[in-house]
Length: 219
Image (tube, rainbow, N blue to C red; front, side, top):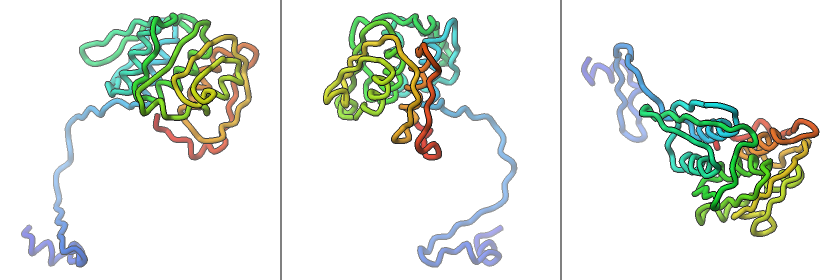
């Protein structure tokens, strides 16, 4: 079909305001296979859950983004063996909830707030001291939304501005369950508190979201 014939049959294709023309035609069905990139939020969480699980966890389609690689480096610094297959999958040799080792150096989260906040939840339940830091941008980001409820659960966390800004010094210990209402919807804070709740002794952790409908799904 010619362009003139298309326009005659569908005069609405002409955009009178811009003068541009959109022409469409029929085509056959699409066939083939695509491999979509891994999800950043899931990559972070799958790696951390694998580290504190018992036994081997395979994380398929791990996203090798800078933030996710920061989480990977921190997990390895905490004594967890992580292998990478030729296909790009990760094999995480988890050591259980209390199988992490005290890091010999500070844990550098790069520019990943997800790494810092989720790790703070896990480290709050460990019987050792750790330091979380990051690049200049991350050190300007507030962390009090995760620090305050973790302190309420029994963790000792120090930082600049009374724990408002990194670096954060996390001294874990015996945590207690809390009923906490998130003042601001945050998937990162929610995940951090749920991870910390795995270490609570007296009762399960319960979080009630102030605005669950607006909780972001992004990391």
